[in-house]
Amino acid sequence: MIHIALTIDENYVRYCTVVMASILENNKMDDITFHIVANDLTSNSKTIISDQVKNSKALVSFYTVPSLLLEAYELKWGHKRLSMTVFYRCLLATILPETIEKVVYMDCDVLVLQSLRDLWNTPMENIAVAGVQDLLETPKEYFSRLEYDSKYGYFNGGMLLINLDYWRKHNVENRLKEYFRANLDKVVRNDQDIMNAVLYKEKQMLDMKWNVQIDVFLTKHYSDINLRNKCLAVAGDIGILHYCYRKKPWHYNCIHPMRELFFKYQKLTPFDDYSRLQKPLSKMHRFLHNLPYTLGIKESKILDKKKFERYLDEKDN
Image (tube, rainbow, N blue to C red; front, side, top):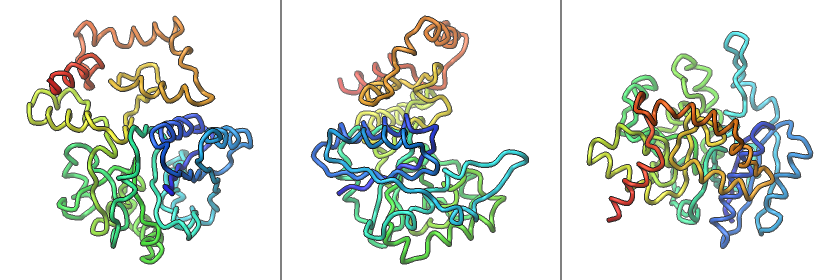
């Protein structure tokens, strides 16, 4: 049984079902249980999520997070309160049943494009968490700010293989809370910073295929042949695609070269509204947004689809 944890709120039900659809479509031979962690989901949203697995052998369980568990992370910046959803993954060892010894956590802006069996079978002895390096080259500032040696690496939190048994035995949740309260000035990237800092000697870095981030598609990396080849090697074997950019596929101005894949899997959910994006007004907004790049007035930071596919073809030939 492969256990998948997705932490959401009511606004992310749509994207949660797309992630689930991609997992089910590419893991038909495996038994999957989805653990949906969310406070205040409507009964209709729970039904939508449950229905996503009704034609498969997968299971779905729902969990709420007691407010007491979140007290350590309650903070306000001026009048703005940070969404507590971002800290749910720090609490999975308590939220999920003790019979579950490990879990794959995923953000809801990812697509699973391969079987998760190899990822799930990653050895985790004496390891708290395994993840993929954040960016092709993690900025040195991350390590100086969090005060640990860069040789230990820094993972992106969009996909994590979490050893829940280890967390329970080594008091990891309390250690994360204590670090957060004592180092508010150092924490910039929320729980991603906290986990990297606290567990820097207890984590394992995974192959980049398990969390392919926007860095792989940045134009600046394709002018250097070595970086280009590195990017194309990753892009040619994607296990999990992570749309970790402020413009998501569902935004009209998203220019990610693999944007269309999102709609392929969205068609397998009740939220197939791709036709909405093809309406004249939406197409015009997208055309006007892309016009400066099409005319060469602006240079896009991200490869367009045609250029990206051409690079892939050249690599294969």
